[in-house]
Length: 528
Picture 1 (cartoon, one colour):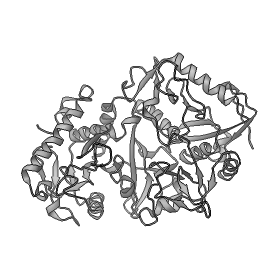
Picture 2: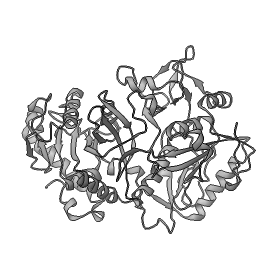
Picture 3: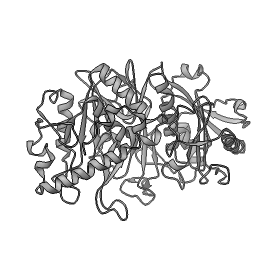
Picture 4: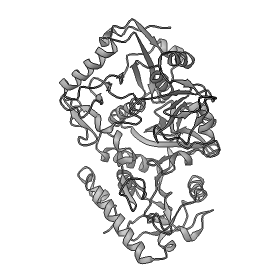
């Protein structure tokens, strides 16, 4: 076991275990972490304690002279002052110094060596070390032997609470990012996803400073032509399912950058939802959850350690983390050229957005900043009709700059490389939720296939009178009568009323971002 001197961080623990293999981390986890076992598939089952998801209301960015004028301050990026960060940092360091043993992971964020960050994780749990070994890009032994000073250090003291009486704290959980010091401190939460998204947040700051667009999206490549596409979509829109295409190589499922040279994945692993997972529904993900992977907060049978993926008694947010090379059609290294197509997925429960529309550059910026999808009735107490959800750039909780910054970078890349931009609705047709029906997956796959083949570039279109985008009216494998939503509604006046309501929600939401975008983008929304 290789020890590492952490004295530069004021950590004086003698037993520091650096870059252990998955097999060794399995052994350490089973010996030291109560409840940790091996699933019958070979994956390590671990538990994150009382926090089974991220704590976005407890994330803070340090107000620092070098970045203060860059950060989009507000409900996403809440500020703390330098002295408060130092209090939390010292609290974390003091806790780490009480441990008999610490684990360190040195790895990379970003497959392109020109832009990658050296990341160092210091933690107390083998499960956390294995998780980050899985989710970051694993260096070769030679790269580890010559690992430079880290560009980001994560101090994970998640077992120890923040002091809620400290200025700016809202609970006993605190996730603090210091962009100037390039450090992250975690207190009061053992949910591993905080580390993953902390890295993404830091990339979302530093990449745009280098004229690189960081994106919350998937990326795939056609196996024959080598042409790539990227796909944005919030939870429930079908991004993971539609990215699992046997005809295409997977670059990544979640976090990417678009540089002057093309697309590269930020991560070395995938972090998939595991609730209701079956080998029939997601065969690639199911087989990837084997030795070397982590299953988080799942319920298993004690007699044979088989996982009950339908059991949500601990949380709906059960997860599986696995190295990307466990996906059979992954392209390693996870890099590709400029995308020919950019796809925005939405699950419109109002039944108003067409199955597929083509967007001009201004509309692309508008819909990128809007990041629209919808919740359906019954998902929350008191919700009796569809509820619009907007997340800027399809990744609002992880943005650091104003959304307009990312939209400008996207528009510049699209213009330079003549990428086609599409809005694809995987939601309801023939009426809103409760009246209409969910778009058949086979039709959505046919639409995405037609996008990738180039068949839709010359397809006939008609402008949507309210939203303004060009609605595709003919697509191979899709019935013509469903491509124009109003045609599928029995009550045409009800359609008009519902469409006007949704358009108003778009306009109301976009008021939050108008100050940071050009007039042409502001005018690219619905005409009401």
